[in-house]
Image (cartoon, rainbow, N blue to C red; front, side, top):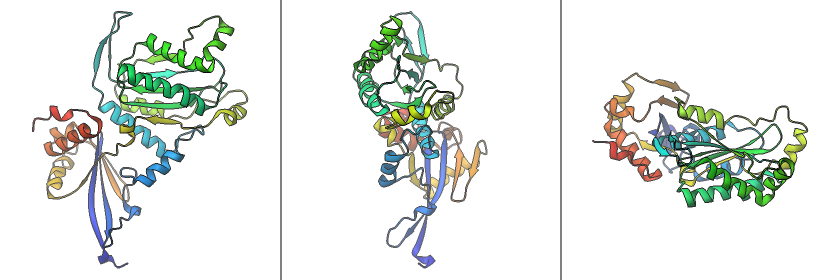
Length: 319
């Protein structure tokens, strides 16, 4: 096809901590040429569906694409979760946090495949957290322990007392007999099957959580791990609520107005830049857009957060 049949369209995608600049080529027939567009930022429905069918499968490691996906979900979860102070009734302490970071384990040897435990236990817990604690945003990751058991790391946007969380999880997993088997061995009906990690002193929460949630399974040193893996590994390796899974970032065509706004940002020279063959990433926290004088981009992205994740950042923007 002759070169004149193509039109070059500049785009940007704004996320909480970056702006991606790229181009799309459009032919006169309306076809977008995917070879030169930033696919990770603007996947179409077919590509996203293929990803959900494949790269969340539990094979013990996460693909580079899955790492990018879970990183983006965590980024938006942390960004849209305000710091909270909660009075914990049992201890009388004041808990300060943005995101609750929880680990869920099985108190006795795994006797069901991963898919069963995810569907019957993890999903049941998430349903109860939505119903009784108004949980709206969450990200979870399934991981293999050294003893061969599956366990889960869970990020949620609300406070749940540790004792209530443990009681719920123990009741749910005992539908498959895990607490009863623990009691027969240890004589205790309340196993320590949950752990709520403190993140108060973590400086870069998004980076810390992404690194923790995207690491490979901790199966090194387990006995008969090949046999354990083939017997139990099945189903998804991670997940999040629907709104986070659909978040792609704010995609804008660069017209004259947007170009003028970008000049204010790109001339600031106070951020790291990564250049690739077909796109450039500017690592800019969206709150800094106002500092750089780009009030309009800040407003557009604040509106995007409100419309897609019901986060009212736009109320803070006095433009």
